[in-house]
Length: 298
Image 1 (cartoon, helix red, strand yellow):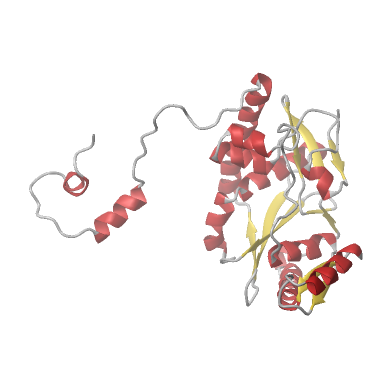
Image 2: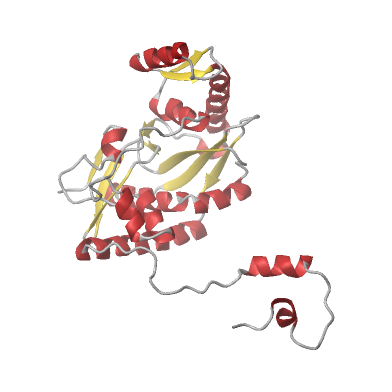
């Protein structure tokens, strides 16, 4: 096998079916390995788990639709129904799908149109995105790190691969500092590490990475968030740890779940601080304050 950058259908990418080699690791599985367990990653892999089934019934939302319009050029068909419960609504939906269009309810169509318009305006108006030129959508990248084969699929890349632009949607805030918690918890940092590593492996270019974040509720605001050096280093460390864990699991064919030993968890500093702020006053009996509040440790 050789490293490659390909144009493949999303379904082929999801099934890891675009090559004849060993199963590949992607960012969502890598994030799952580190935040859950290797067993969870094995369960979600289409080629490792014989019982794996695609999530064909994934719930529709305006964020998914806006993503499809922006990246895939899907055409929205607005249908005048309150929902898709009636036979007439379902027939109209199926007819639109058969025609290669994206059927949505009228109110959702308005939201999608606003999200897409604001996203495009943000890209045009940002002085930091001037001169990007033609953007290449959803190129599949397959490459090797040691004995491990990996895959990723950046939303957009510039023709010279110098910039990767990743589109995210949220029902919360797209304000950069507020979105950072979602970025970390959802594994978007791992995705960035995968895509930067994949581009560098294929082209030798070290790309800059930018998230275009779209809010799914009025006023459908959009923000641009860059991958800082500190966040890139954090993501790279997690990327390397996940690749090492995957390599071990593949070599040994061992996919462990949670530990068998009893795990004793400690209250995090933020919980202790909040309790100290809210706790009723106590009479100081001379012992350390944490002992008076929480008792002696076992």
